[in-house]
Picture (tube, rainbow over the protein chains, first blue to last red):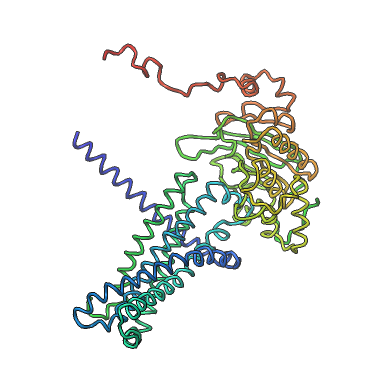
Length: 268
Length: 284
């Protein structure tokens, strides 16, 4: 009896692993298909602009408000620690580096996954459930070019812009708290920040990170929508998988990218 | 409503073929364990309205997907306007689909577009017509289905019957040689049902197209179609003109027309004997 239970357990693990590998393979093929259909999709530029509006502009409120509060909290917490070492004038550096290197791309990516990624998955999944994708195919219009590619590129383009705005509002929030509320000298706040933050090493790397996160979230969102079971439950599960999968993928990718980007700091 | 001269290349689909669709010896299954179609053969002549009837899950919609090239038969031939559908490459398949309209069960209208834009969609995708010409064509199609006044509405603002009529207008937007209807009468009130039925017949005759109607609405179908096929267990079990079907003594056809709960299609799904299921005769 224990042997058969063990065998059943192993069989289930094996079957689950096989399914996961097959799905990963399908996702990779899907990614290639999206890329090959992208020229046809981008020719319909109005569709891509529309998706930039839905994924980017409509995410502005949550991104800007979150960025502002994250910056304000970061300033309060940072000041509390820095002033113990008499380094409160370095608050601008702390906030700016934290935001442009890490918090901007990562938190904006997580918010983007939950706001825009889930919406993209739900929309494509519902289009599948209501046979709109089948109808498109039967009209000799490829849904990959007409539906998937514009949403994918809309997300990829929007994400770095949203992350930049997140960081900007975060720095402004830190300024309000650090300079206006606590009373740190404005000159040292901005001056130290300017002298330490490096355009190539910090800002460009942050932009690269956010672009990679945008690609990851957009790919997961369109794939989960396209692969969703055409039922209410299927669309709901796909939406959840998008948010959870994107969030984990962002955090994992962030670690990998950080290892490669900041090797020069002497830690690794 | 003459066929628009699209500027995209159209593969060699002969609109004058006497047979619009031919299936011979088609077998198909979604998995290896269960064959849905078992040697299906049928002929759909040009210009006719043909109904494919059968119980739920008998493979009626699968037949439409095989004709449209969304599925490939495991064996057998599917020929549309003289061209073998499974042998078509992607370009050929898309050329075929530009010649085939399909009305889905619940319309499958694009919910982010208005009624007007839904009908203009295939015209914009496949022709280089000016906006003025597209407008005229869309209004002609909408007028044909009696919904010119609904052009600015969104699909969410339409009743089920209206949505079906808009989908019908979209299906004929490119003046196809064949229109396939998947359960066009499902969930409609009697008035909408009659309107959709009449539209299928009138549009078929006015445009000189061929219509394949997959349905299980016997009474509405008998009023409008030229020929019926009855499908059960993956095979054609009966066929004939509406008059032949009405007077048929075939047990399956009678059960279908009279709506009997038991007959060749049993009420009970295959199951172990009652005594076994309720453990009658077993101690404890």
